[in-house]
Image (cartoon, rainbow, N blue to C red):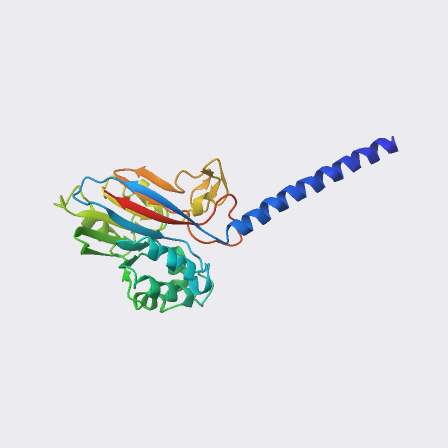
Length: 287
């Protein structure tokens, strides 16, 4: 009897050891993989006279750094020759008062192309909950177009655009100041914008499935879900705002009347690891 128990315990110990080795190997592999980013290309077709519009989308950097002062990231963005750069929020960490890395990155990006930056929940929490009173002004002072409940008409490389942005919590009903006004200004269903491509930068994509489901934007650029943190077979497993098996975590999604491109993000959000979910820089080619 004792021999059987010892034999069972030995097999159990071996199984636990092998499991630990496998899990440790997976963790180490992903930690190494997450030190670099991939570039993902999407092509979106809109019913507007816009040819060869290239947008580089960054989101959810969370103070990550690729090369000294993000030199590798900046070099890659420059090589992609975007018409403009969209930043969909959460470039900082809300509990870290030092967001100088974000400011430096923005100063470098505005030398490449116009940068349109809409805040995420981390910028909002830093500003309104954690005492970073000047973070919004500091980001805008780098030369970016600060899209916090605003929109702008622009002609970029001959392309007529209306670009707007705001931050709303997931499943929100556009409660923040000016959010509804921005949405209405970009809504193709109620505006004579036959020759203008309307682009909304909104950190949380879920709002396109609720309060904006009946409105039409040519393109929405988003992030927030971090690709579902752990990805198996292309499916994210968990999102802070969507729970388990989230529906909207990456890629091009048809949400209501709008095409929504969701970035998996460039950084990590502690304490949740990214597993089989390498950080990404997104390129959107609009035709």
